[in-house]
Image (cartoon, rainbow over the protein chains, first blue to last red):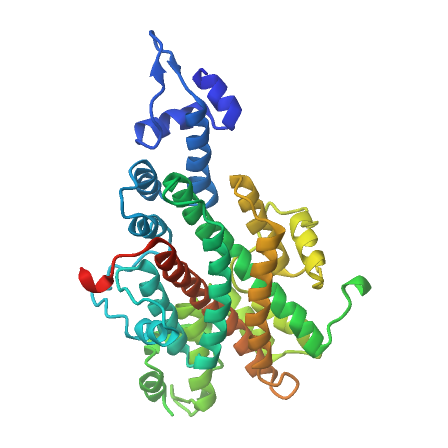
Length: 212
Length: 212
């Protein structure tokens, strides 16, 4: 298809398509002579992913490029590749973090019996979250952490059980891991807030929304 | 105590304390004559909360002021007051959202048997999260939503069960709700990512971190 058809099919303006090609996110079309080029369904699929990562997830171009590189060349160690792809998502490590000992995260992860690996971005992310709680003086008891960890593990078990078969289709598994991590998180936290309200209404007695 | 002692006790610089007083977040000290004023433990407690909301949670001044107003005058309808305080947290509604019908959120909330109220900020938050998923074409099945909702509800049940007694101590309940919502969310999402890695390592075979 011509670039105008690709644009119509994906709802992406032609200048944006050209920009993604210049930035190395999208392969150029096959030259047809003159200034024309031919695009295929591969371009349609790739453009949808680029837009999802840039506009819906909101990643910077460099992080999108990194994810696409991993999709194009996943290598043999797919566990590490999946981890690197997910690490392209925020929150990003802070520049001042030279000490990667993560004492708070290590204590929690080891108590849960999970694998502690200081190279996982999520390990530093947990450390910062725990340090922030500590800084405000509200308690984060072991009982609360166990409740949260059990809930996180249930969700993660569902996510991993529904991951596309990695050895057969690493590109689909990487896309699923990145988009699923980024896009389902806001669903989970919105549901937590709604569950708070549902349960607080039961505990405190809420005015009936139909009355207002 | 003098302002210098208040500053030493809370580790907040004197110019910041004066700024919070000017912005109406902190009550002025009791005048002692001359340019001196006397501050009490009430100021220490309030300053710690102000710093937690501004620096740790990262709220803008106007949102901090709103939360403090609710703490100072919680009124009789404490369920609504708690909801308003939590609504001072991001993500904030988008200006373009004039249609508050929230069709995606309504379908999910009603299927779960929770209370649908379009005035809850979390209802719009769920709608936006579901719309984003829809926009990328990766499926969010009822089975996945039920798994996520069950996990969110477990976490929320723990949170609500450990809330300070609201009628006796509304200020503590508001502080708990705001800080607990804001600060435990990053813990939950970090734990989800770590659980992903723990379970993916089991499923895919991960290199032993001790080997590297």
